[in-house]
Length: 67
Image (cartoon, rainbow, N blue to C red):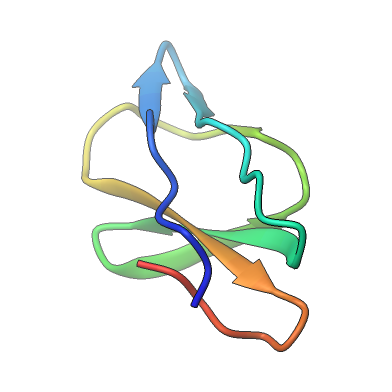
């Protein structure tokens, strides 16, 4: 299971997080209030607003999703 993504922060419409160091990591899934809003290989994402609960989860080469 991929590691948990830490240091998720949203400020002035920019969501950022610490990069996964897992060698099997492939991309991130981004959630707002429990709904997936994006998939990306980047460690930041422009968002419409700062409201809501944002989560970023690592997805590995076998498509397992972290917490």
